[in-house]
Structure formats: C-alpha cells, structure tokens
Length: 525
Image 1 (cartoon, rainbow, N blue to C red):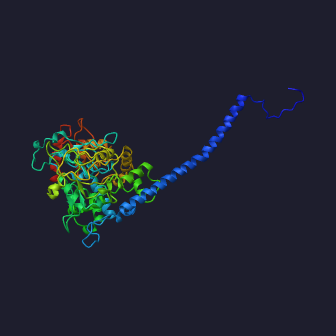
Image 2 (image 1 turned 30 degrees about the vertical axis):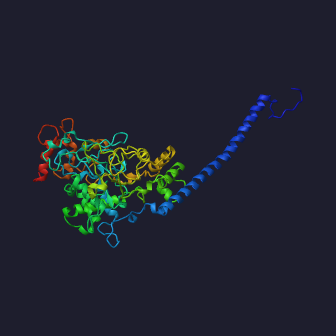
Image 3 (image 1 turned 90 degrees about the vertical axis):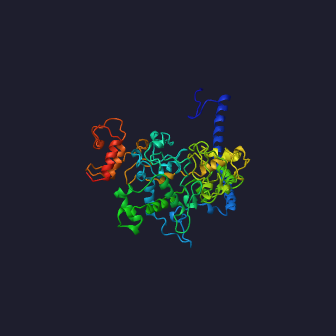
C-alpha cells in the first residue's frame, strides 16, 4: 500500500472474474426467488379460481339433472328430517322425533341388555343392535358375517371387525331347543345393511320386507326394528330390571309416566325410541354436503369429475338419488351369493316379498353415502372396496347368471381415469368423518358396548362393569357382573368374582351361572 493512500473502511480488493460471476449468481437467485414469491400466489389464485369455476360448473350441471342441488341436501335439524305421516299429511304424533326419544333410542340401540332370550347362558346379554350395525363400520357389521348373539370379539388392533362364532354353538342340533335355534349362533346369511339414512326410505332391508303394511301399522323403521327383535332373539325382560332406564322412558313417553316399569318399558315404546334415533343417523357432515351448501373449494378437481360422472355418463343417479343417494328400486346385478348360505341355496331377494317371478334375485339400491372403509358391499359381500363396486358395474360382467338381470347392468365404458374419478367421489367426498357422534359413551346398564362378551370387553378396553355394591341383593348389576367372571382362566380365590363360586370348585363357570340365574328368578337371598 502506498503511503498516504486512503482506502474506505468497507472497500474490498478487486474481484476475480469467477468471484464476480458467483456474486451475479447470488443476485440472480435472489431475483428468481423474488419472482417465484410473487408468481406462486398468483398460480395458487389461478388454481383456486379454476377449482371454483369447475365447482360452479358441476353444481349447475347436477342441479339441472336433479331439479336443483337443494333437493340433495340433508337437514342439520332433526325436526326437518323425514318423519312418519298420517294419511292427511301431518306428522304422526306416535312417531314424532323428539330429543328425548332420540337420546333414549341411542342408548337402547347399543345396549346388550336386550339379548336375554338365548337358552345358552354364555350368550345372554352379550349382543346389541349395534353388534351388526356399529358406528365405526358405518353402522354395518364391518365383515361379511353379521354375528350377533352367540359370537364373541369386536375389532382387532387395526380396527377391523373380528367377531367370530362360539365354536360349540355352530352345531345347533346339540342344543336343547332345536325348534327356535336359541342356542345357535345368530348369523344372517346376508351382509348387514346400514341404518344410515333410513329416514328417507319407505321400504327397508335388502328385499324391502320392512315396510308399512297399511294405515295404523308400524312405519318402515319401526317395522324393521320389530323384525330384528324377532329374528335376533331380543326382548325387554332384562331392560325392565335396570332402574336407570325408567326416568328416561318417563321423559321420552310422558303419556305412560308413573306406570309400572313393565308398562313404560314395553316393546312399543322401545321400537319408537330406537326408530326416532335411527331416523337421525344421517351422514350430513361430508365434503359433499359442504359442496351442496355452496363451498366451491370443498371437492378436488378429480372428485368434481367423479360427481359429474355420477349424475351424468356413469348413470349412478338412476338408482342412487335424493339426499340419501339411494332408493327403493330393486335390481338384479348377478352378484355372488353370501358365503354363509348352504351350498346350492340362493337368496331370491325381492321375490320373497312379492312372489313375482320377475323379482327373483333383485335387491334394493342402498345408500352410497359413507362407504369409505366400511365394506364389504353387495348383499353377498363379494366386493371389498368402493373401487371394487365401481369396477364391477363398469365391466358389466355378472358373477353369476340370473334370469332377471337388470337392463341397467351393462358395460359403462368408462375409462381408467373416469373409474378412478368416480371412485374418489363416492369413497372420499361422500365420507362423513364424524359418525361416532351417533354412539353413546356409556350405557345405563353398565354393559360394554356394542358387545358384552368377554373377548369384546377386552378388545374394546371396556372397564365399566356395572354397579356391583356387594350388598347381597341379586339384581341386574350382579347378573351382569357374573357374565364377566365366567370363563376366568385361573381359579378364583378372592376378589369380586369369588362370591359367584356357587359350587366351591374355585372356578367361575356355567354351573355357577345356572345356580345364580335360578336364585335371581326365585326368592331373594
């Protein structure tokens, strides 16, 4: 440095060509990033604009097909849901929906206290309506076989249904009551239909047998409940022993308040309470519902394409219409028989109700709402996933040949992209993520929900085992606790189960159960 030369404090030596290029690169990067920072939001705005535009286009298309998208909306107020009507068009006061009825019906639907009619002690008070229609499976069984009374287990660690029959009950001819099969495993050879959206249909079950037979007869939902009680060995005897239910019945049915329990807690009131509850089970919190309400960003572009196909070229709306996206139309699609049917036996479907040969092998068009992860599908359970269903209908090739095959069951000719778009619409856009809101947290009986067999209690981590107070009274609480003590692997020498060792063998078994049951029915100790 030459003496006396002044150099600014922030000056740097002259840059080499490489250093200069590097510095330009940094500035170039800054400029590019700045441009992206400005452009990306614009791209996002453009994409959102495209989505909004497409949503409005699809909404307009669907509205033109169905006469306005408002016709597809499901009310959020339970009083606006369909209710049984009198011939003049007014709501039938016997079946009007009230909050009290719904609250009671929710408990009753999930309470295993109804399953007391089995002649096999181990199966009493173990199954409920929710055994074959539980919320986590979209109010289906979650498996091909709908095991009720006489089965055990709930779901595995991954949430898949694992209910299986008690092996000793499979041979029904070994039981003492072969006429009514009350020792057999309750296992209808048909996939359990969902109770979701039942308020919208005037005929229920796969063949439509649950319908109102005439004025003054039970409406479809209550008729279906009565059929279930008859076929699944359910009664109200044990329920009348649960003191906590009586005030709930008095609130729900004030016309019978103050009467003895056997009058208030009768089957007619039970059917009406469960019926009111079932009518409120509606999957109206899906993204599809948000779209119908005007949210242009609720569905993806692929789901919008699928919605357009559903109401357009896919032809789905011909059978799956209205807010429930189902109908009481019946169609034969040649789907495979249920594996639980004896070999060579076929389910004749609608024919069992009408006796019209043209109705053989026809089944009702069920709702397609809330199907995601809730298979299997079709009456025989031959489709595991929503995509399986759509591919089957697109191919138009029956699994079995039936003489009444629907003229609507023909190859649709959808491309692979269209099949996938239709799949994501039905599977994802129609999925309600909050269906567990329709299940109670606990039951007045203290039993585990939805099943109360020993395996299910373990699966469901159910620890609320009734109100056993050790006062020596042989009441319902004692009865339910005994159910839990039966089958202990180790000898019982102390603890709460010890008092049930009636024969002194230090093991709680069915011999102890029989002795306790006889004492409960006779003089109190």
